[in-house]
Image 1: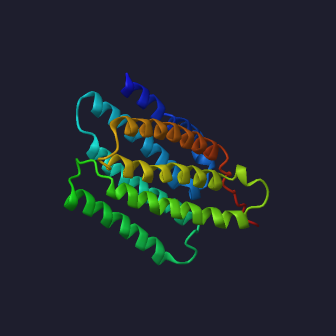
Image 2: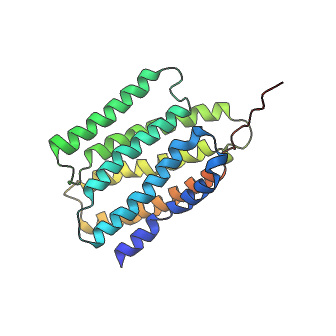
Image 3: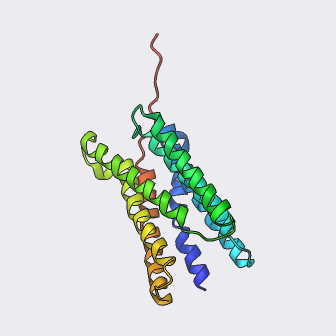
Length: 216
């Protein structure tokens, strides 16, 4: 029963996916990486649930998802020109993410293991990128920033991945009690739903792509 409840809560991302599918043709390519991230998230949650029901270890799917999702979000920040003309920063961060993932799941652990090292590293990177993006948005956006999709996405990412760092540290701390860990995971599920609903609102408010008419 608990697995079913967790799966239903995880599928709150489906709302953002449905809105994204309906708006795909009207949205410019700038936000495509984020939409792909939402689709990947939804697909992974469904796949993991099926594997758990069949009593198959889903960690290898989750760990591959972690790499792909982090690179998609890195691509999204690049589309927002958070790196300005410093392409080397993007390349360095992508290199750090891929190397850290490889070391964690092929040297320190196995791809089928549940490790928190990479999760903490990529969560920290995404939080820092989100904060940097927010600082730029505050100075650039005119009007109601609460309706800016970039602002909403960054806020949701900061809330989710900051707590993700905390929960990974708690989970791999052997001195923490089982009950405390379960309570922390319950909070994470609520935060996940919150982030997914904010994502849906952000997708709904993504501006339409501009159609250019060639002059004659």
